[in-house]
Image (tube, rainbow, N blue to C red; front, side, top):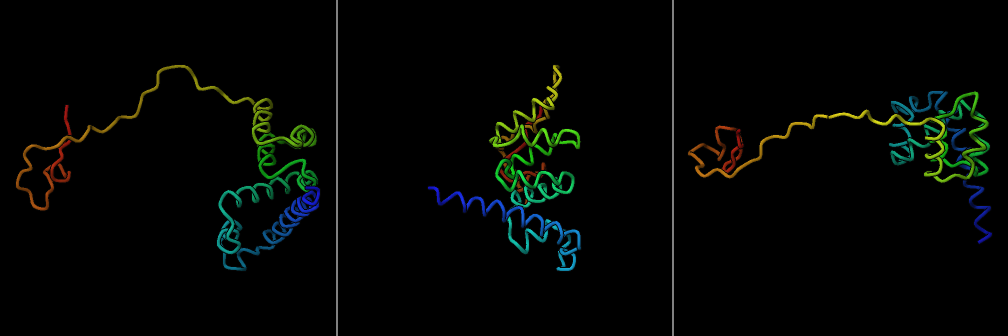
Length: 165
C-alpha cells in the first residue's frame, strides 16, 4: 500500500508539468501551427482526451494564469482538478490564498458546500409558473381515407390523427 504514495505523487507532479507545457504550447499558438482551430480541438483530436478531461484541464490552465499560487496545492494533492474548478468559481485575488487553505483535502461535495457558504445561490422566486404547452395527443384514425403514401391531410402518418379541442 505504501508503494502507491510515490506513484500518486509522481502523477500529480506530471499533471502540473503537463499543464505548464500546455500553457506554453497554447501561448505560442501551438494548436494553430498543428492545424487545430484551438487548444480544445488539439486536446480532443490529437491527444484524444474526453470532453470532461479537456474541460478540467483547460479550466485549471485558466486558473493558473490568474492565480499561479494554485499550482503547488494541485501538485502536492491538497487540491485536485475537480475541487480546483469549484474553488475557481469563488476565487478572487483577495481571497485565493484563504480559499486554498479552506478547500484543501475536500471532496467534490464538501467543496460545493463550501462554495455555497461563500457565495449563496439565489432561490427561485415564489409564484405561479406557466408550464410549456403540450401538443395534442395522437389518436388512432377510424377512417384512413384514400390518401397516397398513407399520409392523412393533417400530414400525420396513416392511421393517426391529432386530437383537437
